[in-house]
Amino acid sequence: MTFNLRKLDVEEIKRENPFTKLVQGQTIVEIPSLQLESGLTINNFPIAYKTWGTLNEKRDNVLVICHALTGSADVADWWGPLLGDNLAFDPSRFFIICLNSMGSPYGSFSPLSINEETNERYGPEFPLCTVRDDVRAHKIVLDSLGVSSIACVIGGSMGGMLALEWTVMYGKDYVRNLVALATSARHSAWCISWSEAQRQSIYSDPKYQDGFYPLEDPPLAGLSAARMAALLTYRSRNSFESKFARRTPSLLQQQKAQRVESRPASTVNEKSIQIHNDGYVGRCRPLVVDRQSSVSSSESLHSVSSVTSLSSVSGEVKELNPAQTFFSAQSYLRYQGTKFVNRFDANCYIAITRKLDTHDLARDRVEYEDDLSEVLEVVQQPTLVIGISSDGLFTYSEQEFLAEHIPNSHLEKIESPEGHDAFLLEFKLINEMIVNFLKKNAKEITDSEPRPWGTDSINNGLKDSVFGEAEEVTNW
Image (cartoon, rainbow, N blue to C red):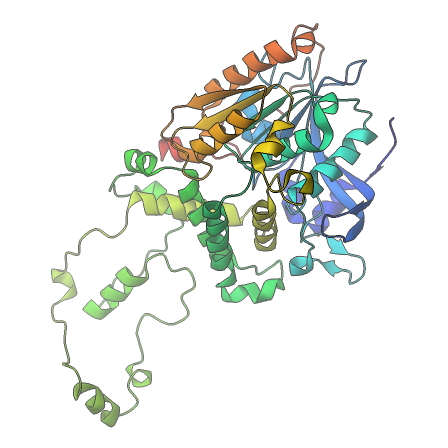
């Protein structure tokens, strides 16, 4: 039964949260109340979403697309080549909706939301929201739109976690098909450890201030480092080797990486400092060092020399020819770190990685006694599981586990050197797999007459992607 959720003023939200400006054409609605898994109740909170196509008469031609960790509701941006007539996400036949997860900076309830009790952003006081909390909030939005059932729920990585929860929570009568890419039934110790390392990068930034930093001066260095670490888990060793090897970055690449060119060194010590601190964005002292602060007196110097030898370095700057220390791979990571901090918030990053860590299909489902295989056996929907051969984060063995225990499942393997992010890069293969799956399992919809729809918001290319992973890596 359709009911109305209050639509919020997107322009007003943009003034409160500048990151929402990055997502064009989305709708943000206010959900009156939801009790989180933790027991806390959140009231009058926003959920952002974006749609393509129209509901059919049965209101059951719905594709729910679930975004990954740092994605948004704009499927056209990060999975654009899958969206269009006769493609996997066909708006002429399906009603396609992507809902922004809580904790994300792109419009839904997050650390950037205003707490009415304090009239300040939640920041680190933002409550823990789980994958299940997301699904329940998103279900309220679908109910408000009058959706009778979901033809298929589709997601990769964190989106795959949501897709799995949709099927377990609401069953085959409501969610009729499932496509899960590069995901897992529970977040592994390996993934939890990487999340922790990335959070510690943010915590180590002096500007973090326990999460109470001003939005105008956030912990950019820490967030950038977290993003660099994450990128290494999204790719593979062989992918980086083939793209970068030990090549020197071009001048354009160095400019993209915003590498600061130091003034010419006048001494060998200055040159050593330049090499040592190349890439350090938080320089807090001049290049010329005050030696008086290093050794307070001749007595202290004498005490050092009494227990160890004193060494020296000689030579002239003009004679130096140091080995290469700046490489194309470094410039790429620095560029990606800089690009990321312009579109994401540190507290949001912490909140969403915490969400990932909570993911466990068997958690608190006492009837299954912590047995994942038993939980997966209740997933009766036709299921397509897609794994990546080189994925070192959500390993192919985890996709095999899903396919082994979901009764009506089919496993596809993508042979790609690109690692985990192949689910965002191997567009042609993924499109073909999903199209074939839907033609078999949602035949009534895929064979229906196409309906007119607008195509203005589709991104068929990769160059202007804000939230996708394909931009730049193939031609760096």
